[in-house]
Image (cartoon, rainbow, N blue to C red; front, side, top):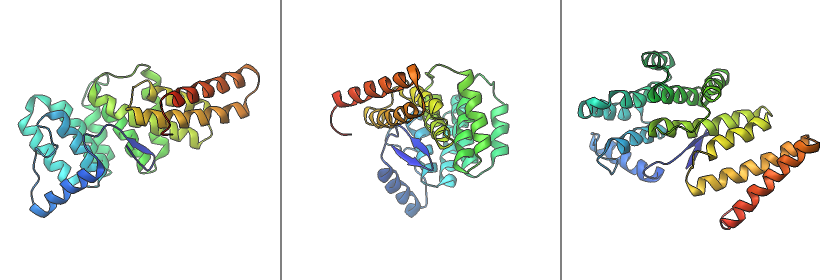
Length: 235
């Protein structure tokens, strides 16, 4: 897990250091190996594209996407998600929006692209546009997605949305955003860190509340702390 300008990255198939070493090898060799994601399958290679973008290599990511389109013609829509990520990394938001509009709004790929766009707007400090897209998605979709591409962006978006709400003092909705994220079953280490953050926010809400609402948030914080303690002493 890493956090960059408020965006948390989940479930990469390799660490940032390993990815950096791979990219360095590509740069030195002057070529991009399409099988460098350490697993010869589309899922791993799509996540590797995102890893390249996180490290700031959109041009190399684009070369890999071009190769994937040739090798996996049946997965055109899935690969288009990463194509959109590349456009966002290059701040070509209008072009990214055109790709999104070309797909059915209910498709997992279109929704993943929309969340990727929201994350991009947040990363480049266009907060109002990011918030509009986050609210549009989370108000319309109450369940955790099962599509693997959408789930990856869902987790980053839920965390980033929570950070936006927290920064504006909307702590009650921040708690709810963390609930969305924790319900998606992130990795244990990530989940425990999120739980600790959520407990702290619950206490802050309780400080502002009174009566039953105050007790509800204190009880929620206490339960989270108990769950964390039973899970070990890493936090």
